[in-house]
Amino acid sequence: MMRQQKAEAWPHDPAYPYVALERPTGAEGWPLLFQSLDPGADDGVRLIALWPDAVALRRRVAGLPMKIERPLTDYGGLAVALLDPEGDDEGVAIVLVHADPVLSVTLYSAPHIDDVVAEWRGWSEALSLPMLVTEADGTRRPAYPMIGRLTVAAARARRPRRGPLKHRRPSVYRRRAAGRPLAGLDVHRGERELIARD
Image (cartoon, rainbow, N blue to C red; front, side, top):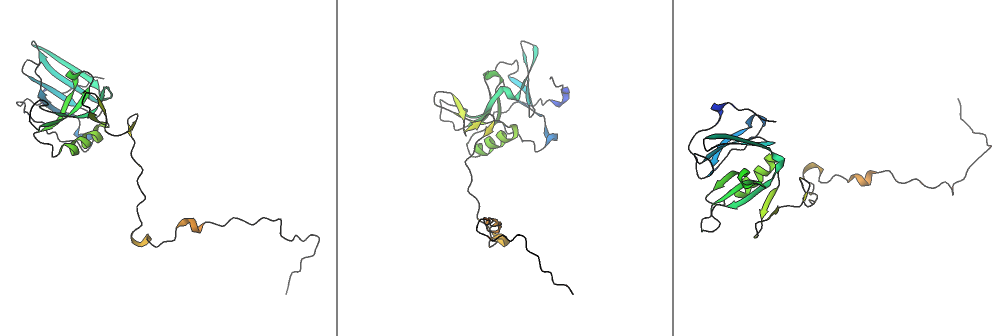
């Protein structure tokens, strides 16, 4: 489903080398409207709209306006990438990865790695997409074991009791004991019952 945006809603400020988007905390914060560098566009910039379930890309090529919208399920996840893999620059980016690199979107970039893990995890939760680790050969895999789109975490140990319930008797000891078999009990039949009356 194509989504329409008013022209004035799109940012037209010059592009910056680093991206620091504020993740929405509720439904009213979507879509996110921002721009990023695009060497293939006429002015070197493309405009992006990000929803929790879709991405729209707009740019101008050879004077013609182009718009592509893809569902978020087409994206494999969020990967951490070096801004300068061949150099000494420590800049990193968090990229919304698509099989077609042209459709991949940078959601965060910085000249250092101080906040990259927090941003990586935050965007993964916001978009319900896995965190991806890039191997030496360029392939990517989930940072944590997955079942479909669900992350499989290790079982957590039960927390020790604290506060007023610390000394409470466990409920297992309050269960009723099992009944005794009737085989060894005396059974009286045909006898009159004595009832005391005033």
